[in-house]
Amino acid sequence: MPIIPFGSPKQSQFELGRRPYLESVENLNNITSFGTLRSHHDIAELLFIEKGHGRLLLKDGSLQLRTDDLVMINSDVLHDFKVSTSFMAFTMHLSSLQLCGLPLGQLTKAPQPFVLHLSQEGQHAFLRGLLREIKLYAAFNDDSPERAEIAACLLQALVLTAVKLASEANEAGEDNASYNMGTRIKEYIDAHYLEDLKLPDIAEALHINLYYLSHTFKDLTGSSPMQYIIRRRIDEAQTLLLTTNMTITDIAMQCGYNNSNYFQSVFSNIVGMPPGKYRKTWSQ
Image (cartoon, rainbow, N blue to C red; front, side):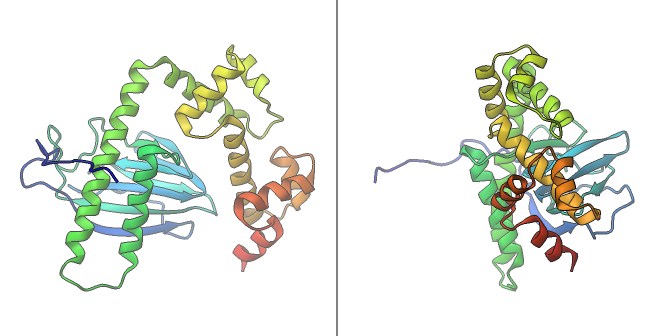
């Protein structure tokens, strides 16, 4: 194996003496007590959506959240959540964070939380790995003196990677026409995914060709438009299974599937069990 050099860092991204440490990790789900806007003074927050969808409620508006979103929340930002029944997430509270050029407790320059949707590839995959390791390490019942330091090191790697990717996404949003078009495609799909939606319909509505549509959307989200549509439909089906008494056939129709057997096959492939078993498992 060839030697891959790294060397000593030329300059820290953190202000001197202001490397963050992990204050706490909190698991969130649909039974977590929400309902009050709250903030954390001088403590930033990183929230990762593992499953389901919801909204991040802010003092002046809200942000849509879905599976694989990483939300970067600055300190002193009032926020709360409205979530689906299938919602699962965990949040990390960061103390003593000060990135160079930013005030204490800020992950981004903008005051509003930044949502970074993670794909399965490249540095996004590395970031997902760090999130997985932090959650795993938080679950250890370990009283060793190294515990806090190890968690702090993992967190610092997570922060540096997330801030870098968020900065790149911001630059792309400002300067890259394909990023803006990818966002338009996503917004169109989000508004119509429960309909009988096909790629030519999207292309015609947005006045673009199919090749550009597919590649632009995958560059933005890491998945094809049809994969994204299917995932959104199954997310909706999961919510309906747990929050209504609708039959599986009716849910299939509601989620854009005219064939109940095909719907159940798609659902099983993504969720790992048939819809009936899913409803029974989570309703017990």
